[in-house]
Length: 497
Image 1 (cartoon, rainbow, N blue to C red):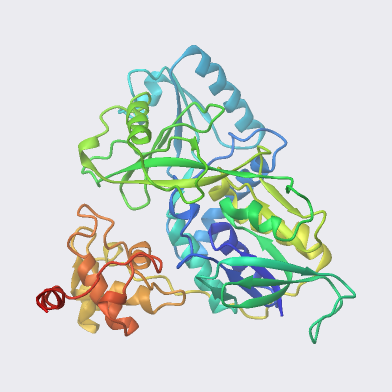
Image 2 (tube, rainbow, N blue to C red):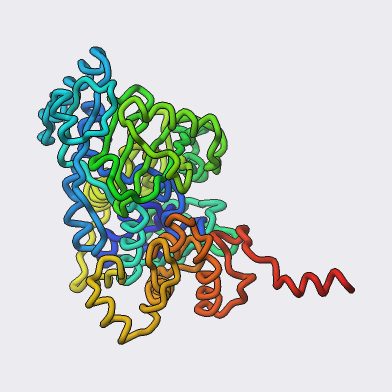
């Protein structure tokens, strides 16, 4: 029996698995996807917000400010990238200026560094602010990360320290057991759960529900309330990715003054040197509706000109969409269910969920679990080895590495300058890549200008060789994402028979 079962291996679930792995307990991490960080964590703005936006008295406000403070040290310990990019919030009307001043005062009341700027002062810092901008505020504690890089690193360390990660395990049913019912050998008489997936079943004393847009459905599996007291609506956000430019259009995150719907269409430099534009915000019914739309992207393209000019839309290399888990209560829901002991909902985690993730984990462990289930820390803890990245190395170090291992001298992805050695490294690691998308998330082949047109066939070959499978068995992502049907000559031969 596991002590804790976490359902959902996004960034919140992986923070919990990582932080709990420092305790001497048995932990199970389940996800229905083929990899960690495949849901909202894979498709968002990648910004560590300063914390002045959420309303006073909300969990969002508390977790945002705390999460921002935690991130830099966590990323340093994990060996992943974190940049204090700073941010500018740009007002374009007298009404927006009033809201800007309100947000400035809120920032100061929360101890968040902030500075009001005239239009001229703002232009000195960001020359491509639009002609509509009249006043601005700078938030220097704003940061940017690569969300899936952080999540994969958290999962790696969790697994190195005993967490049992099970992917492609969709939860079908959960049965709660109460004291006095038939119990397995070794049970203490406390409540426990049996979690059923398609092919397996698992037992755990605690369940932590981090299932994103599916969290209300997971809770409904154990709750006697009908309907459950919270509901989630998928909110789709669509983005443009702009190619790396010789001269960046913006050096900081550029926000419009936020509205009731969200933070608005923003421009942000990514940790890897691209420019991200978006998102819109559209509530939909489809829990898997991550398709982009003409209407949504047109809206993003139109609205970015309100705050930023000279955006080179002819340099766009990709569009994508992600879903946020918008709850009906306007705030995060983080609590032990009042009708199911030891079942903890970590639900309705929309923006600023990425920023809040480490604080959410801290809160769940210290304020909920440990009050009822004291845990002891491990006497030793194993840290992950950072991934190898040639683009961050000097020419001398690259040459020495390639001399020791020729695979690091074989460039597979020309756009991002990714070597075969780097791809082999991410396949062979704990929580290693098993799909083309998994390799892309970890080492970046296919994230450049040609979007995999040159390197993807080579990635397929390397995966097939390393996993001991046929190239036709290599998937882009999950089981359904077939890339190759067979050898061309084989099909021609069949057609002639």
